[in-house]
Image 1 (spheres, rainbow, N blue to C red):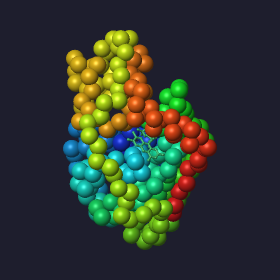
Image 2 (cartoon, rainbow, N blue to C red):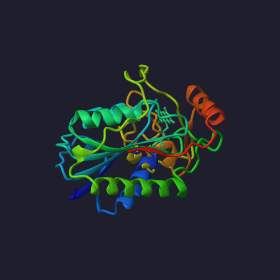
Image 3 (cartoon, helix red, strand yellow):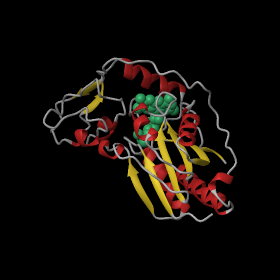
Length: 265
Ligand SMILES: Cc1cc2nc3c(=O)[nH]c(=O)nc-3n(C[C@H](O)[C@H](O)[C@H](O)COP(=O)(O)O)c2cc1C
């Protein structure tokens, strides 16, 4: 089949899912239209595809699932038989049910899942003190991303239509892993090296940091993505000692062994 256009949709507060998606687009060899779901206004726009538009959809794994805040945008997708490559990026612990959930959702929205992949990105909670999958995706991961993109295009070239693609089996369980309800979060410390540049507010995907009050974070909106911590040019934002550093410490101790990207066609 002939692919008319490539759309690259990703949610990526700390940039790893976007990097993987970019490598996949390179491998596809097509000019991509970027749909950056990290930006709140973009998530308000429903996307409609035709049967010969390819969608590469890349999201990070949050607690073994697709990030909850994408639910509304995903349910608004109108895919009309379009081929979709589903990609999850996880922090070297596990992707659990996220890839299954993403591919189920795409099918429910009328998409034809033609490929699935799970890649590794530096863990959102990784720090100098508690390093987890540091600097991933690295060159080898991005080369794998390109290879995945080439394979997606080769697969589609060999089909009459995306509907003719095999049903892809991916790891995971239904019902998906239960998400524990969480009260307001309070885990970010802001030191006095903060120069109130506002980068944190620009990077926050959920508007938890408001202009002019950069030392405060609205714990009822915060999703723990850590974009503000990792993106602070002054390194003024860190995790407070407590439940979040406990998780980071555990991850650094238990998830040190390198995992590799996998894909399913
Ligand atoms: C709230 C939250 C939950 C996470 N849960 C998982 C998980 O279950 N398994 C895992 O391996 N990584 C997990 N991660 C790490 C991210 O999946 C990983 O760092 C990813 O590369 C971040 O993507 P981004 O750079 O596109 O934001 C979690 C991160 C956050 C913020």
